[in-house]
Length: 527
Image (cartoon, rainbow, N blue to C red; front, side):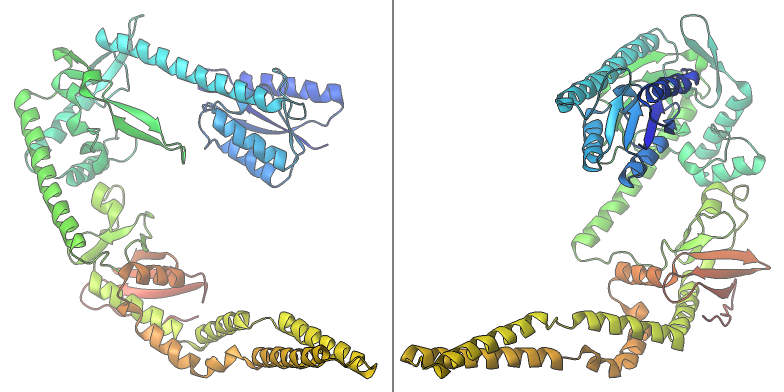
């Protein structure tokens, strides 16, 4: 009997001993019934309403692989607090002949009526979470109405607790940078430039990492330093909520109606004056209006048959310095997106490359690689296999021939024994005709040789490679190139960029040198 157990506790406030306590209960149960000690799968400080728990997913993969016969949990709520998820998991277990046992609550899928018990317990666990969330939200609302902090701590503030709730106060060491961000934005700097400057100055971001433009410029839900009303002395609580997508389990931030917002004034927390705040809001709105107009033009172009994706290597190029994507950074050039968004402190690769030259050199290298003899031989082998798979199976045709011949032979034997009637003669003629038809069908199948199409394979292959960039569907061409090259890593060295192609089909590794500036000279790279 192969046993396993899954243990979990919900948040950091709970003791890590919770895992030990659950495991001890399970181990004692195994000892009582004479089973071996179970393999442990566990999740710490993760709610049971989520399905992306690492330990839970590892346990489910082991179940699908048939690595254990019994799964024991302390109680079903440790397993999952989503009754639909727990029900689906149990169905998988039953299919794999795995028994689920709840040591403390008595659940056992080998017992009659387990479906009702598991369904009820799963529903109760989910209702418990709903009730807990409602009570927690009610408590936070009370804190917000009283002016206490009911959420995270924004950059620029310090939190203190007075016994009733957490109060914020200005952290001047951070607040001066909040003012600096607002001042630079009003002066015309972009959020990307501001983030790069902060990184160069060594100022830690709110999460003690590198700054990015997304931390500064507000997203559509108003999340971002430039949109945080607390900097202007006004706290808005309950503006958004998180909703779980039932199809994939991902949480999405959605905006609540304004009637649900709790707004309190806090002049003592004002870091940004009214004039600066108004100027920032005005620039953000103007930017959004401009962006909306551009998107409307793009939609109109698409609706009238405008072109789709324009660049062959979009999504394929990666920076060898930081691992970030190489993207179109202006109208004509590729560059590192991390360097563009976060500055030299996040990535030192500031090399920009003309798009046309990158495409020309990479395509030349790819074509040269593809036109090698080894690449063609692989194409030929795979083509032969495809054509071979097209060969019809003659088994059924042979069976028809044998059956028709046998019927004709039986009728002939009857005639030889003196059974001669108009019907036997007609039956013999029909049988002989059926035999001829079956033999002709079998002959055509055996005569069909798909490899007869191969003599022009090299010519066809060269034509396909030569027109690689001429495919009308750029997205399809890009995916074809991805299949050939894999990811393309661009590494800067001595004023040059080396493009390293990690391939999946025709080779394991190739290199092209891209010389930044006027002359892009490809090196010889082969298989």
